[in-house]
Image 1 (cartoon, rainbow, N blue to C red):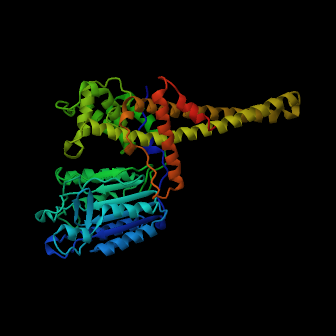
Image 2 (image 1 turned 135 degrees about the horizontal axis):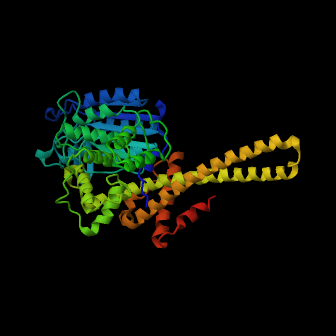
Image 3 (image 1 turned 135 degrees about the vertical axis):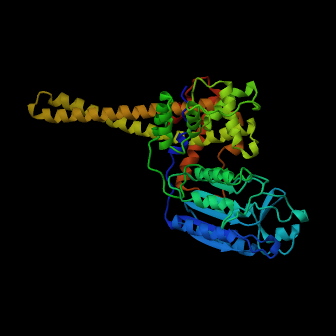
Length: 510
């Protein structure tokens, strides 16, 4: 069974580069605290540097330094107004923050003393930040928190070090400078370690915002020797580019080139794939195959906490997120455990377990299914349109041949009609081939998800439709396709194996 599905997530959404009024950013850098012991060198530098970078990317930027709670709330109100129906709404905060209970507090510089009451009165909460950025109704809501410096209130026994992970609503990405409960460094140069990495990658053209934060994570991990691991919580549908979007590709480009590399089983083939798709869904597997072909040692598979009963589900999950070649016949228990060990190695502290893997794969399946459903709908419409044109042209030719077959003066016109019908027929075959491919991809995804991932698709993994968010036309389409995918999963769970009940339901629209 072919399961080359995950790539469709990366190929199908519309680019989101827009004019200045459609990209709005609020930057707050708090370093000059009233208590000199809490002073930070870099937040002001971070805001100034990011102001320049985002302005060059077409953002309308409001950059603020050393704000107290009232000024931070006023700035959030500004963002709420300025970013109405924007393509991107972004909030960046650098400074001290603390976790109190289940809430994260961004501390204002007017903090009068180290006490719980003073912190609450001098801070804005992450909930307030999310409410402001999400209520603008932008296609993409970004909250970036370089705010996990060591807890300044530890001695006063107020709050906990680091921040707790909080995800926003649909269309929101929250990026933390480090993983939950840990602390970040202020850096030794002009910028914090995290912001320095962000500045290095934010203007890179052709990469989705999630890929961009992945590069930031890698750079920070290298720079800190693994002591700081940036963290992202997101529920983003579609691709969003802060810099230029990549050249347009057809949905099957990466799949076709990947299959050629797998068939060739050569370093050159896998290198060609990586050269064309450096952020492709199979980049991890391609790198492993190159290492293997060159004699490099693969990750050790011992001490991997996977039971024999979990292997089939783990393989499906690892295929979904790109650590195992989809449909490869030679993937045995040892290779699955190696792939799982590799996946765990990039989790914060190597703490990923089987449940975490399955939840990540289930979330990915939702996003992949959403866009695969969209492709299939598009291909169905294309085929219906071309097929109607072909049938009409064939009928016109039949009538013309019946009426003018013996008329010498009509022969040139009849030949032109036959040639036109032949060209339309060829297009019809090509569109039908695309439809067959997307239908197979979608059917395989439904089967894979129902067999191995459906039990992990909790309410949190499914699309939520908060009334507080304005839904744009692009989001309307994505949300509709997401609902359709989950409807098809429900059909498949009760239908006999091999049933195409989901396709029958989709065909009712055409």
